[in-house]
Length: 130
Image 1 (cartoon, helix red, strand yellow):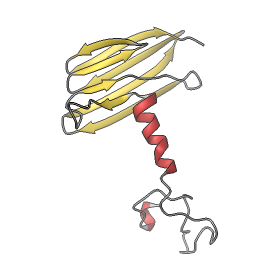
Image 2 (cartoon, one colour):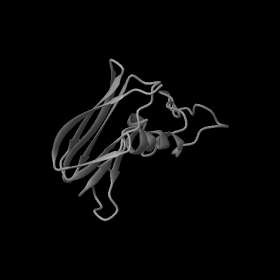
Image 3 (cartoon, helix red, strand yellow):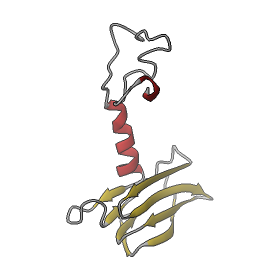
């Protein structure tokens, strides 16, 4: 898409084909943000990375990952003006293993339990509940 001039997410990855023709004259949106919503879900729900309202721009963060047993693992990285944020969870011998990195003060919430932390990398485990 980008190599063909896209500045938004297209409905079809090949909306404009190599020869310059459209994929379809009937169904060919060049601003189809529905696909972008998946990314938002991955970052804010599955990885749980959110800015804090009273400290916008990721000056403070809340990280509350929500693992999904249909997946083996998930990792999301976000570069902010304050530094790198990473949220990862993996299945490991009946447990979820969480790896969280924050460049700023954060409230990390694992299974409803809050952990107020300063900048750094943190590891947590919780039992997988099927």
